[in-house]
Length: 216
Image (tube, rainbow, N blue to C red):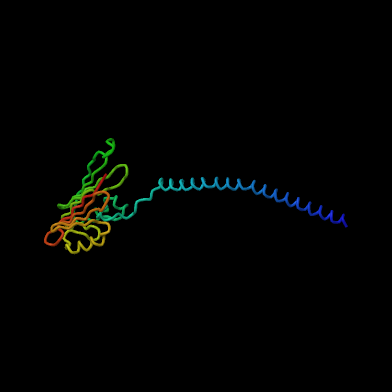
């Protein structure tokens, strides 16, 4: 009987030792694995930051293209950006005989480059364009319209009633600053480059339209 008790005690003691060894071994393995996981997390974080920075850099290098439709003050005659760079787009709108002049001019920023000024004349009206050689653009810088031989966008024209003009400008009030006097209505940009469209009045009707663009 004493032997049985002794053997039982030895078995319990041996089992306890084994469990203790297994518990220590498990803790060792767990503690050894934890730093690797933390390192991996720390390693992943800079990669995510780097990716975000790269995305921002790409956005800076590839700016959004200009819209294909120009606002009224950007060009009061032709809305399509591509068509606005062609003189024929303006020829087609003139219902009168006209002449065209082309004069070379020194580039405003580089003296070794020659650009061109195109001038269209019909009756007492005139339209002047600046054409930079390098960009291939055709920029309307001045238009002085004194007859109904040409109609602007939104059917704006010499001879239209003042009330009709005001109604049409109100539809674009969000983008325009409109100032009215007894003899003139001026639509201009709210911010950015100074551009204006002057409507001179006579007896309640538009008698003359003067556009003053901005060319840098």
